[in-house]
Length: 322
Ligand SMILES: NC(=O)c1ccc[n+]([C@@H]2O[C@H](COP(=O)([O-])OP(=O)(O)OC[C@H]3O[C@@H](n4cnc5c(N)ncnc54)[C@H](O)[C@@H]3O)[C@@H](O)[C@H]2O)c1
Image (cartoon, rainbow, N blue to C red):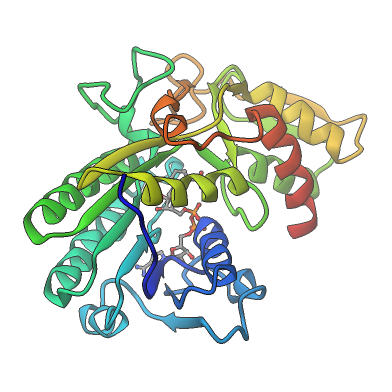
C-alpha cells in the first residue's frame, strides 16, 4: 500500500463549511496550508481556529481568475477542491450557476494544475447526487448508469469525468469523494440548517418541504473530514472513487421532530408542503438516498455516528452558530 505524506496543500473553498474543517485538520497536523476562497458564501470567521498559525495562509481569490489560481498553486503538491455552488434546490431555477461554478471553474483549476507540473494529488468533493434516483440501495460506487436528476448532480458528474481524465493524462493522483449530506458546525445549507433557521424566525410553525418521507444518509462533518483524509492516505490506484456517508438513513419528518426537541420547543406545529413529483421537496430532490460505504470501510475508516446521531449533534451545534 502506498504511504503518503502531505506537501504544501491548497484547499479551494477553504472558508466554507467542509473546507474550513479540512483546513483546521491540516493546520493541526503542521502541514503548510493555503485556503483559497472568494468569500461568496464562505466566511473568514470559519477559519478563526487556524488564523494566526504560522503554517496557515488565506488567499482571497475567485477560481474563475486563472492568473490568481496560477499564483496560488505555486509549490503546491496537494489540492483539496471543495469550492462549488453546493445548492441542489436552486438548480431548477438557475442551472447555469452549477455549470459555471462547478464544471467551468473545475476545468479552469485543472488547467492550472496541469500547467503547474507541481501538483501530485487532487481530492475532489463530488456528491452522492451523481446517482440520481438509484435503483440499488445502499448504492455502491460502481452503480450505473449514473443519471443525475439535478443540475448540481449533473455538474458534479461532469467534474468527476474531468478530474479522472486530467489525472490519467497528466500524472496526478485523484481521489473523488461522493459525500452524503454533510452536517455540523459552520454548515450553511441543508435540511437541519433550514429547519433551525425557520424556527428561529417563527417558533410556532415549521414547514417541511415535500411529504417528509424523504429518507437519506447524513454524516457529521467530523466523520466526513476523517473520511476525506483516509481516501487519500490509503488509496492504491491512480484514480479512486469513494462514497462517504453513515451506515444508515433517516427521514425528514424525524429530523424535524429532533430539531424541535433539541430547541426545547413543545408547541411547534410541523406541517408538510406535500412536495412535487410524489413527495420530493423540490424538483431534483432525491427521495431515497443511502450510500454503500463498504469500500472506504475496507481501508480502515468508519463513521462514529449514525445518521440520527449526526443530525442530533449538528442541530445542537448549529443552534449556537446561527
Ligand atoms: N455539505 C454537503 O452536504 C455536501 C455534500 C456533498 C458534497 N458537497 C460538496 O462539498 C464541497 C463543500 O461544500 P460545503 O457544504 O462546505 O459548501 P460551502 O458553500 O460552505 O463551501 C463552498 C466554498 O466555496 C467558496 N466558493 C464558491 N465559489 C467559489 C469560487 N468561484 N472561487 C473561490 N471560492 C469559491 C464559497 O465562498 C464557500 O466558502 C462542495 O463542492 C459541495 O458540492 C457538500
